[in-house]
Length: 203
Image (cartoon, rainbow, N blue to C red; front, side, top):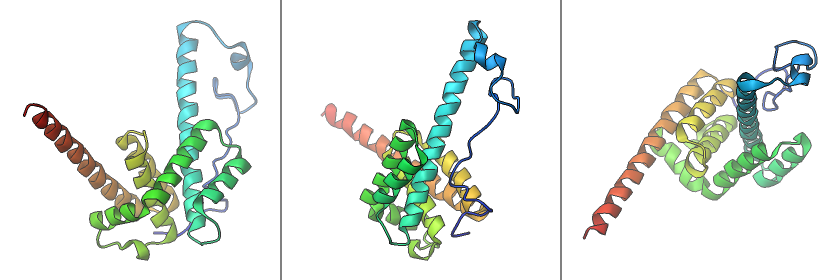
């Protein structure tokens, strides 16, 4: 498990796509984009495009949050300060910025609980012994699973993939196992609370 992203360029920063999203041309937007299109097919493509844009924005937000937590591991600045600098520098859109702030805020506010959950789910991997990147991935992932509006299964899938990209397959498996256990425990706690509430209502 690596302590930093691999590759010649830092993959935490997503690359801008080029070409026409409508026809797949490698050149700038072509007539099919400029003219728009009419009817059900065009509307369907528009909805898919909006959904794709939002997914990309949220993925950008996760990467920026991860970059902020990772940089903060070196102790020069707070995660919040690093995050705001990165958001301003990258010109992140509202959806990306909101999710990034949610994740970083959750980790900062709940770090003790998050670390305890990591060690309970994977006692063979003490948090202090994890590489900085691995520790940051797990903290961000748990922060989103427990403290955001993202459906847990979506957050788990996204962070498992980020773990694979930035650390490797062993970390991907660890993140999948830890998040799966935490999600199941959280769901069980919520179910028990609901049942207790219903039982109490009928007393």
